[in-house]
Amino acid sequence: MKTRRVETGPPRWSALCLVLVSLSLAGCYRGCASSSPPIHPNPNMDDQPKYEPFEASDFFYDGAAMRTPVPGTVARGESWKGDAFNTGRDESGAFLVTMPVEQNDSTLARGGGRYGIYCSPCHDQRGNGTGILANRGGIPTPSFHEQRIRDLPDGELFDVITHGLGLMPAYGYPIRAHDRWSIIAHLRRLQRERELSEVALASGN
Image 1: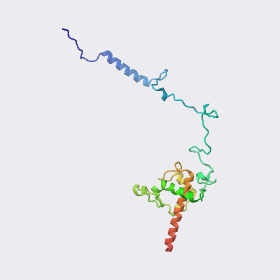
Image 2: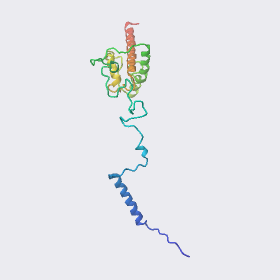
Image 3: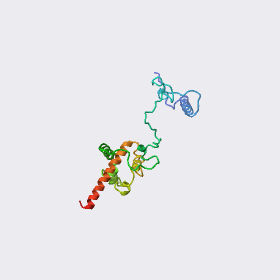
Image 4: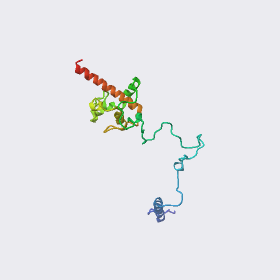
């Protein structure tokens, strides 16, 4: 009866050399320049159908791939020079004393709603500066009823809402200009109500 000889020794040297050579070539290929085009296992990620800038297009009526911005579009970084409604400043650059928005019931209602969303977490609903972030987070928050803030022109308040100040972030992006003026209208109403209350207390009524 014949028996089969089973080799249990180390792997053949030829196979081991082949593996080592393959690894060496792969490492060299990644770091070496080549005149041959690269291999793309999934070419759709590299060669996607798209328009290049200023390229012609048969899809749009004017034959251009780039679209004309809608009227009134302002790119980020561009200023509203000379536009008091969007800057809070007049032509000389001084802050507007009074807002360029009519303070009617609609404006006050809109301002109160926006104030409750964006301002009350720090300044609280009455503008005392004792909101939840001030109480729990220890964030120093001024009261809108301080005399220095009462004396600020409306345009400066608009500028602070737009660009932020100190720990207060800028709200120029999430709050549109008309809503920023509406918030100021609501804020002025809070200040007037506090003043009337202080006068009533002083007179003993």
